[in-house]
Length: 173
Image 1 (cartoon, helix red, strand yellow):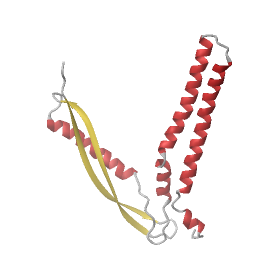
Image 2: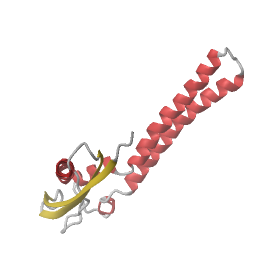
Image 3: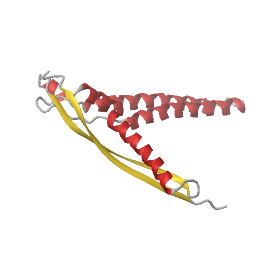
């Protein structure tokens, strides 16, 4: 049976003004915070009318846009002293280089998982050959050391991209 599927999408853009008081010089300042969202979904062509499909997508897009406008921050330095506020740097630390964080989880669980596969094969077949034990321990070690290396790389990259580093070095704290 053929069931026609139609992809629909809604794109919304929005902006708000974010207000901060500088932590260093106590100057209040604002910036325009802009975001856009795209929500896509596949519908069975006979399941929803065109209006209800777009109304559902628009509602989801509005909620997503509102959430992003409230939750996300941009790195905007103080216009007077150039200091980047701690809330902005904390948001950046949470979101920057998240691929490395994900890869570190994949590394540790993948390494331990492959190690477990070799252990199961060795015990199932009652093979006591050194090759199985070597590969089992090698995958576990690669997973653990890979995770540590990726974690250290992420920490180093975050530290080297601190927006206030130059100001601290020049003694403007």
